[in-house]
Image 1 (cartoon, rainbow, N blue to C red):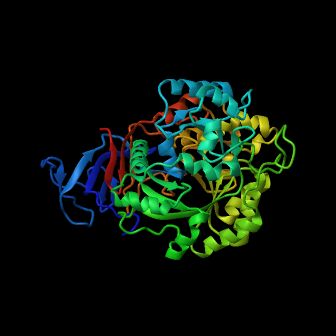
Image 2 (tube, rainbow, N blue to C red):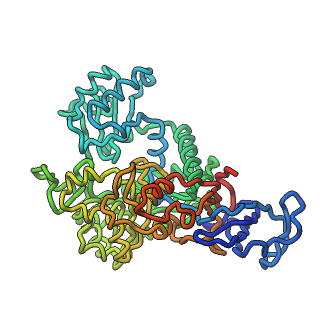
Image 3 (cartoon, rainbow, N blue to C red):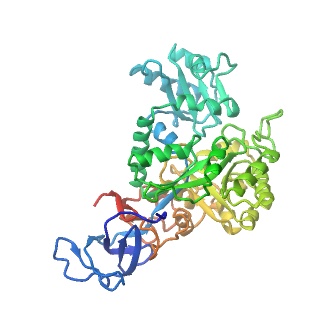
Length: 527
């Protein structure tokens, strides 16, 4: 079974419109694929007086019962993809204490206090929060500050970029740390311990993931590249065996499980049997540096106000380790997804692609040397970016990357240099909603603020095409029947007509999704 196969009933969508076009079309879906796209009225045979089912003529496929759904002028696009998610993390975070609005350590501690006033966590569990960003806080997070509001309740607060955590004294003991000078664990101190607070019974985690996937489908998402830090393939095989069928999933692999994937002979894009064609082997993921908010992204220049050996950030996987890893993965048929945020880390990642001949993507590409822009296209490396991060990080970038922000989150420059862009969320770092990413990419604005470096905007057509897994803006005969049905045409109805118009960008974020089809089967329908 191929990745495009499916078991959806034959379906004739009538009265559809293609993005930016006024004349209606009909689409015939059969066997999980789009079989025909033609002017309205040219595909259906008979008077459809049989409760919406009729034969289909003129397609070369023969007659047979086909369900008809009138889209009544709604717009149809290829289904949307999120090219960078941590889906289990996102499912967990949707149930955690939200700290994203905290403007100081004191405000975050007050949110913890208020939550505990409603009742403590279950015995043996910690209170887990998510989403704080301390880069601009006027005060310093400490274990003592959390102890004052939580007492003996273990508290673990995970940053919005996932690269650090702030813990109470009992929270530190909960994750296995006896003593720590501040209670804030960064990078290598924290990342190996994250699994302690993420530990959930498989059946519960799978139920939460299914719920999160349904919410994504309601926003037009048909597929994700899942880069969860776990034995990802085993988890997804279990979920599909249990009946999961809401999304296509490309399951990434990390170094700890690379040997297992290579031993199976799996290559990126291979479809796993028994999953209805919906589960594929994804890329090999390596994190080479940290993040901006944690001031650990690896940069040529020091962070403003920082001194010492880590003033330029942290290079967690240097070239003498990265190149052999990528060469091995590439030799086994795996694409590589290399996390690089700082400009120095990005240069080294591109060097490693050049040295190994590997294919794949740089994940994030948040700060780039001008000289490195053209290398993405030259090397065939995809720039896998998350435009909401630019909106989340603009103020902290202005502070710590002073004088460099003209080349930060440089989507316009990458597009102009011929790079292939792929949009995503990095959920839970940003919400798993492709319309947020698209709106931020075309406007460089959010929350009523003026655009930030508007010269780095990309056009709406480019942003949409960067969200459809290489399928452009129009469903094509022969392609998978993965579609999103919209109540408004983003190219015609004023929704995204002016990228500099904050109202148009807000309308993109709120764009109503009427339906989502995966392999010709509805995963969301509101009409």
